[in-house]
Every structure is written in C-alpha cells, then in structure tokens.
Length: 456
Image (cartoon, rainbow, N blue to C red; front, side):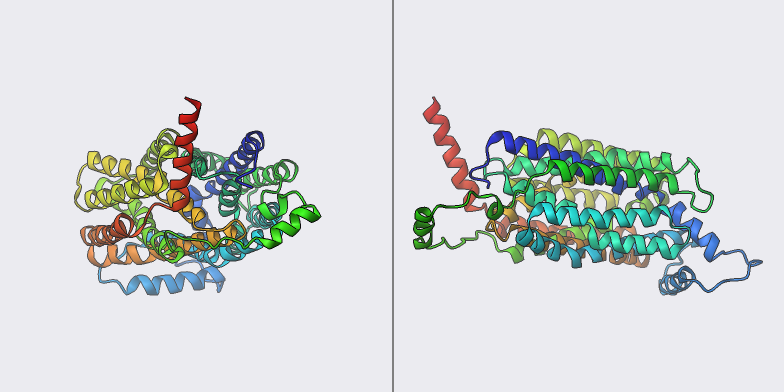
C-alpha cells in the first residue's frame, strides 16, 4: 500500500493514528504518578504496618514479604519508604514482560487478519483492563487489571505498522517521528492530569476511581473513533482484485527476494540492550534526585515535564527530518553523555543538562529503530517484525529497573551510572559501526532528488 496510497488517504489515516494514539497514551500515563499512593492505599487496607492491627493473609501481604526478603539481601540498608517503590517497580516489570510475550503474537495476527481487526481486538482488552481498575477495591483486582493490560497493549506497535503501510521510504522517518511526538505530548500532560484527577474523590472504596473512569472514557472514545474512522491498511488486504490476464502475468513473475541491510536480530538486540540500561536509569532517577537534592514528587514532576516538553519540540522540529540511522546515532550518544553526567553531577544544573540529553534520546532512538526495522521487512511480515522489535525492547524494559536499582543499592550511584555508561557505550559501538543505512531509504532518496531535478 505504501507505493500506491494517495496523499489524501495517507493524510486521513495519519490523522486517525495521531488522535487515537494520543488518547491511548494520555489514558495510559494517568496511572504513572499514582502508583506510590495507589499501592500505599492497598497496603494500608490489606497489609497494614501498624503493629496493633492483626496481619491478614492476602496476596499483597505475600508479595510484600517476598520483596522484603529481596531487600534484606542488600549490603546497604534500604529504607522502608522504598517498599512501595519496589512493589511499583515489580508491577512495571511484570507489565513490560507480559508485553514482551504478547507483542509478537499481536504483530503476526495483524499480518494475517489485518491491522484494523488486530487493533480493535487490542482495544477490547484495554477496555477490560481499565474497567477492572475502576472497580478495583482490592489489590487482586488491580493486579488482574495490570496483567490484562500488559497482554493486550498492542496500540503502539500496530500504529507503527499502520504508519509503515501508508508511508514510502521518503516519508517513513517523519511518520515515525509523528508517533514519537504522541509519546512526548502524552508524557508531558498525562501524568499531571492523572495526578489532578486523583484528588477528586467519588468512590470511598476506591479513591482513584475518578482517574480510572476518565481513563476508561478516553479508551472507549478511542475505540469508537477507530471503529468508524480507521480503514484497513494491510497491503495484501487493500489491493484491487486482479483480472484473469493480470493474475496470469503476476503468477509468471518470480517474487523478489528480500535483501536486508541490517539483520533483525541486530536491530532487536540493540533495542533490548539500549532499553535495559535506559529504563533502569529512568526508574532510578527519582531515587537519585531524592538522595542528592531532597526532591519531592512535584520537583520530579517538573523534571519529567521538562524532558517531555524538550522531546516534543525535537520530535516536531528535528527528528522527523533526520534519516533513521542518524537519529539513532544521535540518541545513543546523547544517552551516553547523560549517564556520564548523572554519575558525577552534584548540582541541579548538571541534572538538567543530563535531562536535556535524555530528552534527545527519548525523541530519537526508539523512533529511529522502528523505522529501520520497517525498511528490513516485507509488507506481509511487517507486523510480526515490528512486534518482535517491541518484544525485545519490552524484555529490556522489564529487566532494566530491577537490575539497575540492585546495582544502585549494592554499590552506589557512581558505580550504577558508571556501569550504565559502559553499557550504553557498547550500544553506541553497535549503532555506529554495526548498523548500516537501508538500501530502500537510499533508493528513495536518490529517486526524490531526481524528481526534484526534473521539476527544475
């Protein structure tokens, strides 16, 4: 479809992708700043720390027991105020690991049954997940909500596949940047909106029901919008049926073999390794700012808002104009600078310098890797390949926080961020010397230049 889609159709589909993904990601980010208070609420109800209250045997109390045993294994004592953070990290890792399992399946289903059908099925799972959060008056229901959400969250990878279906080699990078911009905008405003909604109490048994209900409204609205507005974009399902003569000629042609410039294994490995270190740094950053600067949640919120704002500006003004490989290279080098600064800084100025580098990384690396992976995939395998790329990335995102914070508590900030810098340096070497510019993007660029000369 990328070769024959008309500009009007492409513009219409891109609009649908942008609006739906923005609704989805804003809804998704509501819960992020609520985790500490939300989990603290369930702990106070099901596993109170007050010695005068008789302990009850619940799922949450059992999980906290295992986490406390893990915490006790560290040489450095870990304050009890981090219990909720550890639990939140464990839930975040579970969500990412479930996505790692589900993403390849969702991608292959979209290759077989169509992007639209796979996306609507994914939305049904998301609705069920958020609905369970609305009625989650106990931790077990909330955990079920997160499990279903992890297994059904396919919106980002399917939006990427749809964007690839309707884009040629010239426009693919800018299209991927549009998806990245949705992330940046959502993470700039979504958490703050979720935090504000959590202050509005409507159900005593679930203080977070208001935020959950608004999240559910956004998800349902997105689903209805997709149902009525999104056409099918899978090339094999959108082609005009051939006549007998053209079908005979087509059968006589031998399909061209796929010539890959970069192996999918290398792209997937780069994605996993990068997110292994990057997600660990993201998760540990609030600990570092608390230890160094006594930052409160509002201070950290402003810091993350700054990262989201800078990333949004870069996505809209710079990243979409860069070739995908150059975008990835700039991002990993910026990430290396950020790790190096965070390992040594003792000033707020240094913190925000590192945050600027992290915003550059957020605006470039994953977007560029998605574009590179799409160039190396045939149209009838694109969903599966992008699903595998996301799966490897989610595996890194699931393991990174646990491993990185373990080093942080065992050996301290300098050692943790120093090891992180070495890991990102390894990723940088792979990106700078292992990855090459895809043939398709070069061909398209040459063709574009020739067309411009003809017009002149």
